[in-house]
Image (cartoon, rainbow, N blue to C red):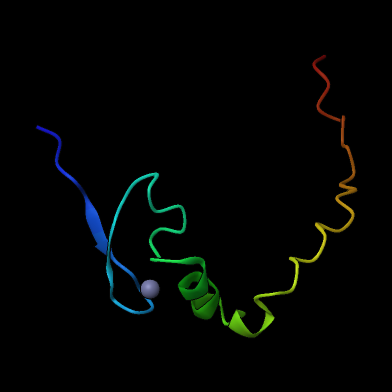
Length: 64
Ligand SMILES: [Zn+2]
């Protein structure tokens, strides 16, 4: 008895299955996901690089 959890795509309202079958959940597709993000126009563009994640490694938390 395994219930199938379904959700409605926030963009188009299409019912999708909440699971690995829907990698873009809660959206029904990548397109809807991009539309929601307002980046549908840049769909074919690659996501910009992560940038330099040079966080200052603060090791000041030394036990005394
Ligand atoms: Zn959708």
